[in-house]
Image 1: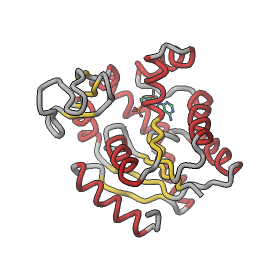
Image 2: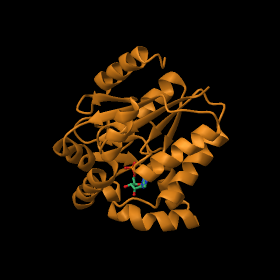
Image 3: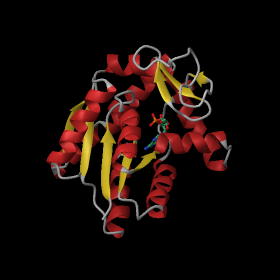
Image 4: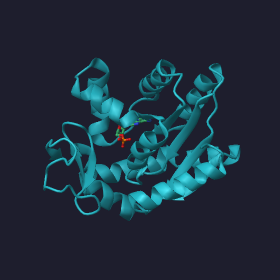
Length: 220
Ligand code: AMP
């Protein structure tokens, strides 16, 4: 049966960076709702055009839109040995829909990992983040700088700042997190599947802590 991991935490806590590392290391499928929505926006699909209105403000896209794309993705790849859900669920409605969809296929969430950090660190991570236009790789102007300014190490693509990583939008994203997503911590805590890691560490140290956690939880 597929392993299902949920990464929870405020924007800028390092979920996306770790999800990429974990997917590569353990062969799990990375399911990032943010990436899937940005892809739909870039392709100018109907769903993308609808989602863009919310994303530009840093608000959440309606639950039904997001749940459909996540469930489709999992079902399409149901033979994968594992899924890392990065940025989903973000509301209680999404958490309930996910559980219902998984249980219809005899699947369960193994562990929910909370990346704990402060708003100051989130803001500094997000406002310094740069993304490759071509391959989507993430950098940070101070913490993970590219070898050549403004150019992706991996593919030579141009780096840019996401519209929603500008400071005023970042503040709204943090508020939306506090208002709508934070309550999922107690929801999963009550189910006994919430584990906490520090979201303040560098990429290697955070990965080391996650690997130790997975060993303890018999996920690897
Ligand atoms: P992220 O890259 O995860 O920070 O997501 C970027 C934006 O996509 C968010 O600010 C939301 O507008 C939208 N989004 C991503 N995941 C979700 C979700 N699970 N529910 C609602 N909106 C989402």
